[in-house]
Length: 212
Image (cartoon, rainbow, N blue to C red; front, side, top):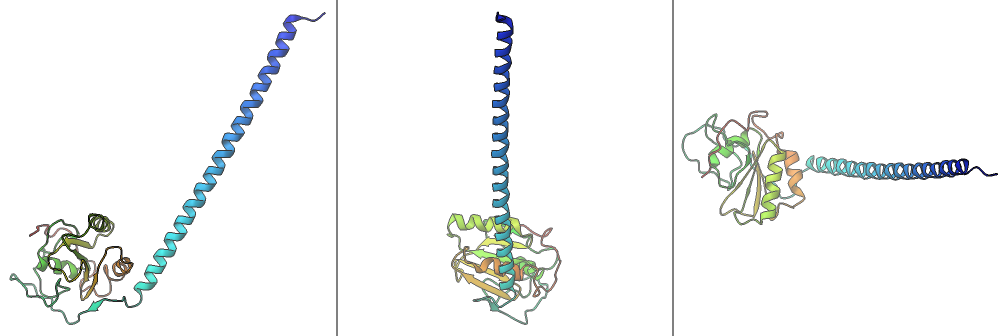
């Protein structure tokens, strides 16, 4: 004669076993999906890293050669003066400048800076990017971002530029219509603390932060 208690226990045991199997299958499914997602993310990160390295290598290779449009000026004076300087270039790419410690601190400025102080920064290996005051806001934001990524980058607006964006290093200048020009990273790679620097390693902070 069937035992009702034993039947209930058997049914309960069967249900518990089925529940455990279902939970085990769900766990395997979750683990499997998580593993697939992790593998996919690793793949995406790897692709991004490889692409970034390729782009960096390409920029460095281009920086080894002459950059189209760059104008070179030789035989620049380096005297320390207390007077205004009539520079041959606009913006200037070198010449006489204010004495230490009155170089312009590198960074982003939303107002023009004194050119005699900026030239002192160029002497220390800075690149000075000047831009038209009416440059689109997204391009100005990109310049601010670049200044945060490079300790020797000086950015400021300037009236009556020969082009919307001008990149200047000691003895070298590149005039561009846009920050998005592919020559921008090449110029920075070549000239930030580049071989043209009269005083490599000298500070681009601890100077002056005044604007005009």
